[in-house]
Image (cartoon, rainbow, N blue to C red; front, side, top):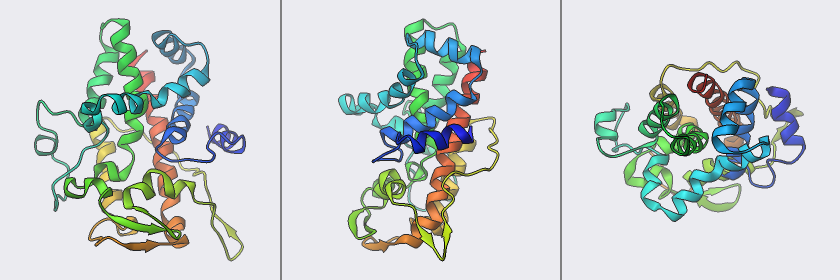
Length: 257
């Protein structure tokens, strides 16, 4: 898996824009393809009516295109909490019949495991390919009153942006930071463990969102973030994308077996 990710980077798949946007989702799905068993890949390709891995990667951004044309699906990509929440509470944060990223992921996994028609399974699969990555973006588990950092202005490496956009695009677009002869470790070598439920993945993202290094909690807006912020947080962001890809692959291995 590690070799595949590095190869993708060297080939420029992730350039110039690389985060939880199109290229970040493609990367997550590329990791998933490497994790998926051959029988799982065959079944997934048949459901999606595709024949190539490249087609699979292209479909990883399908849910975002749907969101643009059907804004009512936007809540599926995040779960925003009330200010001061110190834990996730699905009854409070995603009450029925509202859908959020956690409940949508659970629902689409259930659809893939069911005897639903092929077209319905194809929609579920395309949503999972995107939403599992969204679930690993820490600010998608932010607070509702600032829209997960979208309303928090910031300056990142000298450029005006928002805190959300630093995590969504800027952090991973930033050039590698080298200091005192030590080069940033871009690809993490840790073993990624799956968890029994998407709610656990959400709790991980929520914990990262609340960590001091992220600079989200208590941010008054207008703060400047420099290379040190990149050094602290870019490996975390890369690890989240890696986890998303591994967990997507393992989820599909289980759902399509």
